[in-house]
Length: 238
Image 1 (cartoon, rainbow, N blue to C red):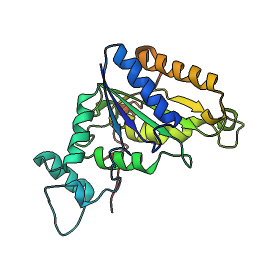
Image 2 (image 1 turned 60 degrees about the vertical axis):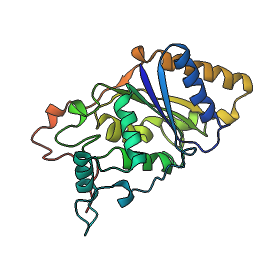
Image 3 (image 1 turned 45 degrees about the vertical axis):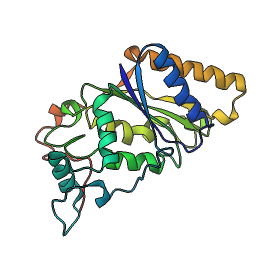
């Protein structure tokens, strides 16, 4: 199997860095192919603008989806974006590795999604959810949070982690057709002992090796919504 890890943490010695290294080691030993896009090491630019494109449909106004459709049809993406799009096409399983910051993903990861999940490459033309471009692929989020599990519970101050990850699970991954595997969440790694951190990394290594049996998050049955939504779109630009 072929795995693509999108790693979004600026510090290699962070627990996120340790998780990525653990996943790469476990998967490689098991005979899988692994590619890592370490966004900070790559100095990936998260700002989406005309620099995305080498071909131009309308030079008078930047309408993102129009330019993406044109670039998808004419091979008109900047080299760094084309490379990431090719990795997405290549992989069987996509892993987002990141810390939860301000109850969301880091800006560099959101920018990667904004630029790489383009019309014509990740969605469009009636391809969404069960009919999505990536409907034969799997994806999941491997995340760390600063607080304890209790703070991310029904009685905790932040509430459960599931609604926080819903925009990623539903609005990005499932929308583009991925089968979404339940996330691997590490609560408060900085509060753990060395023994606890080592045990958690071992659990994560086991997790990535057993994704075939890992629980998934059901996506919507799009036939239920036919006739209610005329033109679904992940992004709208006015």
